[in-house]
Image 1 (cartoon, one colour):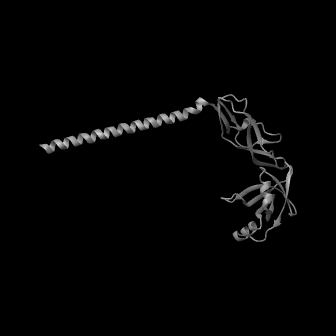
Image 2: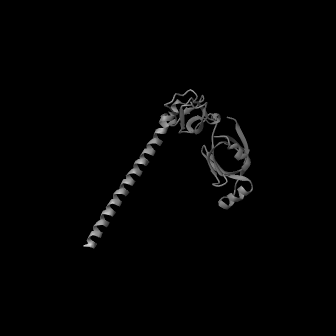
Image 3: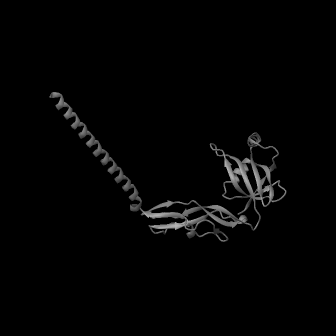
Amino acid sequence: MSEVRIAAEPRTEFGKGAARRTRRAGKVPAVLYGHGTEPRHISLPGHELMMAMKTPNVLLRVEGVDKNNLVLPKEVQRDDIKGFLTHVDLIVVKKGERVNVEIPVTLTGEVPTDGVLNQELVQVEVETEATHIPEGVNYDISELPVGTHVTAGDLNLPAGTTLSGDPETIVLTLSGEQEAAVPEAETEEAEAESEEAAAEASGEASESTEGSGSSGSSESSE
């Protein structure tokens, strides 16, 4: 993975007010830490950072910091409504160091015509070299037989990358159309039984009411 160079400026003001002023200036407040260094408070150009962050696990070379300036995004905060970056935590890494990250799982190929695909895992946790993080892992589903389930351990990870999560975690299942329709049929059957039971209960209640009414009328005529 190639690194993205981005210029940083030191921050000397802190708090919500200072953070708002930083964002109004088109910059994003950030904290850089790790490898025994003191946390360094910086600001980064908002547009450049947003474009860089489109790449998962992007490796950043922060210019304007004297040392330990090769970093990975650790925690990213965004505006709840507009989605722009509001704050970023960056962790220092070194060449040759191995890190745990999540990479996306991309399915390739066409689903068999008689199959119903359910992807249960869209990212998988791996251990890999900090400066060679793969962009993701692909899995071809075009020749999968119906009834197959694929686990994280079945994925063919790039060289130098190992699985750090549970290998038995289900990534996807491929079931037949008839199997997929079973839960829906069971639901419809349960709903029908519920409606039938409700109708019977309503009928019994009506009969009981009518019986009570007849008894009262007879006593009145006497």
